[in-house]
Image (cartoon, rainbow, N blue to C red; front, side):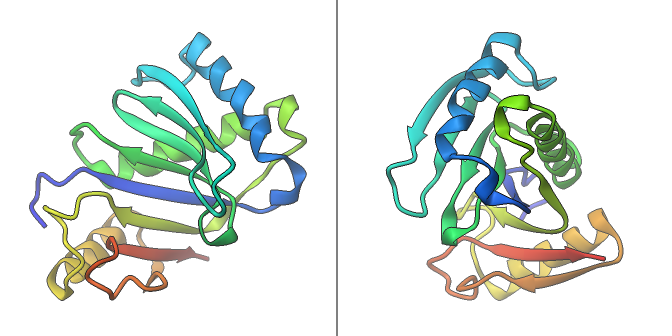
Length: 173
């Protein structure tokens, strides 16, 4: 993993996933595009993958990064994946995802959706620069601890498999 690595993703889990239907996010994300709600991002399009079991859900495409209401492994959460270079990538990705969660939590159309603050998933979205190897796992784990301070970092399910993307569950508490 090189120092110029920036293609991180973060998933912040919903604490009350039954509060909304996944398709409720479609008009909300369209509104974000119309109002360009996320600073520093050019928001472009919305895609509906709600028909895919435990899939990407509803995807909001942006130039700098993509947002989605992801249902992977049966857990609803907001995913933000950075696509463009940025300094201090882990911090920026996390702050952007948190800002998006706050917007969703205050949107009346989403029936009071809430997001957890004590657990999230951090993953590499670049298998070339950050393959799922022992060395890159150690580097990303160190980077997470530097970025988030006193946290517990554990390998996500299946993430020791080199065919899977590098991922860690982070617990703050």
